[in-house]
Image (cartoon, rainbow, N blue to C red; front, side):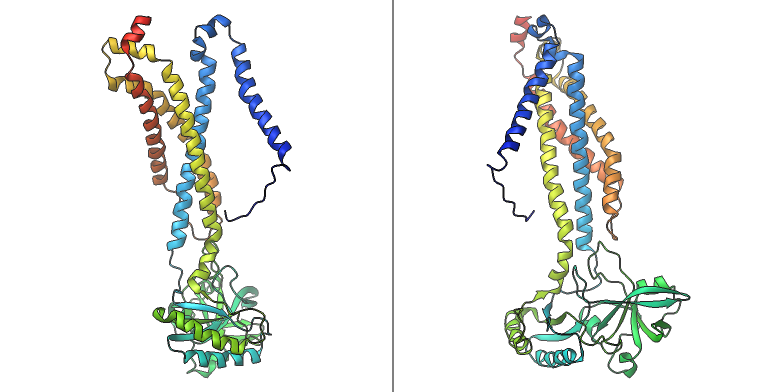
Length: 438
């Protein structure tokens, strides 16, 4: 789980000894109490193995193991499907060739900072291997950047919306798609005054039928919508996409220099040399910074949003393997014990002409029933609790019947593999040995 835990044996010696005593007492005391309630003659003749109460307890515990194992098998499949869905989902942007570099992180977000950025941008664009340089107040990843939220008017109501400032070409560099209208451009003077872009979530929240050239109002100032961009994921696919308004750095008052990082698109075959050249220029503008030069590819940066769900998948996968192993180990023990008490019966049936397939079917039938009962009991709690887990994600899969069919076939196959192997061994019994005994 990527967590360092320091454990002192001496510090926890009393807890360890206490657990050891409890386990020993339970393992010895419970069976002893159970056997002591039987008549001595029954125990000596071995009839205790076929005792109705003993069989009921044994079978009940076996069914319980099946319930728990089926729950974890179903859970593992669903969690893996959800994680794969999230990892392969279209995020609405592409950041595989774009490196993100912190810029003047310890300075004020003002016009001076913005002017330094423009000078830095001009110099970096002249570096061989650099395709484009741009910046925005948003950051792809868990934090999402320095977004400012403002109230926009919807009739008499005021709704909170994320305001994002960016360079004219930022959305193009990130390959974020335009749904209708046009992108912001330095060819239009009004694009740095009152023209803005909005996302689909904004249009949906404000119920705007004709968004292009429509006016939106915030803090008594009117803005004109010139384009609508498709929704894209910014801070993780487990979160929904919020309404957003995009404008040039100069449009919103006091927003110049409001960005955390500079995004630089580079040619993949020149990355190593480009980074060295960028670092030299970065040190020129960040010479007073206590933070060393660092960078990260945008797609890797966004991948951090998956850390929690990947950890959950890993944890549940480990638990599932342990639980299924314990359940199958219990099945192996119970089936070996139970089938072992029927060796004389198997020998007599073989003498009377019973075929091996018939004996296998007879010896295995009850365990298949226990497996089906355990699976049936596990269906409802697994569906309920896993739906609760999936509810944490804005983008999620639906639990279909195929998951349960696959889970049933898997646990049934493992059950038959173990039980039939024990039953087959019983059918190879030395008939003469048991007939002679009888």
